[in-house]
Image (cartoon, rainbow, N blue to C red):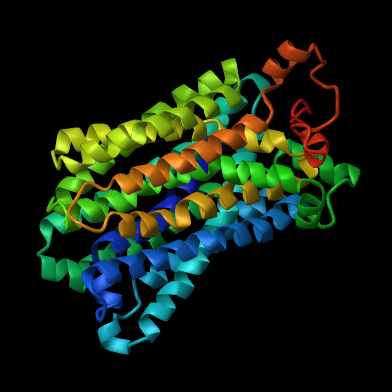
Length: 448
């Protein structure tokens, strides 16, 4: 399990490195380089618009790679998604600026960002199923949290490299070529990830499905036809996690550097400390999910997020590095209380035959609802010289919507379900069947 979980973590970290390095570049330099005729605010909004394209591509990627995962195995998804995202990221670092090729530059940027999102949309489903379908029942949450630590590791790699370059290069050097270096590094990281994943074994659950001929012929059609309500609820439930994460890591970076006058190195350092603490907290929260259930932690995380958004904005507004870090970490702590357990939660909601598609599409739908528009909306709402309280209202509203969605979802931790119902662990009706009628988790107690 440690070897499998480590391979899953490394691959997810590399994929999210690719995705996050774009977000940091969008906050710092892409506006002037690719949208020079715009005002500084409009240029930032346009750069964040290309950032959002990646989120729109992620559900499509999860549908395409989910089909592969449910029909042909989880392992091919791990390799193909990593290769696609890595190649697209290296290509972003090679795109000439607007000054060199005109409108072709932002068009290429949008296309490559779309391919990044396509690859990342497939990565998460393959990575969490690699661990959750190998893990023993009582530690499924813990082992499934390894892929959930990947985003923190990827973010630290991306921003650590950006911080180093921005601190050692002049503004002119950083704008001319320094920002491109992290994109080129993605090629080496992708090769490393492919090498580590080359010997990963297929999961026992998929081997059992293949042996009995019970694989879904059209997984996406089956999910949409029979489990659309479950899909919408999971997407809505996860929206707040994405909104908070990208408010912290992308919008706050642009806001602090452009409107508060905080140096980009200082702000990057504050965000990195908060994300590092989030990564450390992830397995701790996951163990609590194995003990007390997935749903209570998700409800607690949504509630904490709703209560913290105004303090988050107030602390950010101080421009004091320590207070900003406290505000950033407080926001991420609420987010990780949910996301530490969803690596086990979402797969448990769907039957094995449609699990790769259902879990991945639901997860990435949350990214569209919560992550795609947050940097754009927050930047627009924060315009002006006063405190950006409208941003806090926006994030609080998303948290309340997610809280309502989690309240309508069932518990799936097999041990907790048995305690509540007295049902046998192998009593068979899976999470997806009841989800189709809107009554609860599909094979929540099915053996995985």
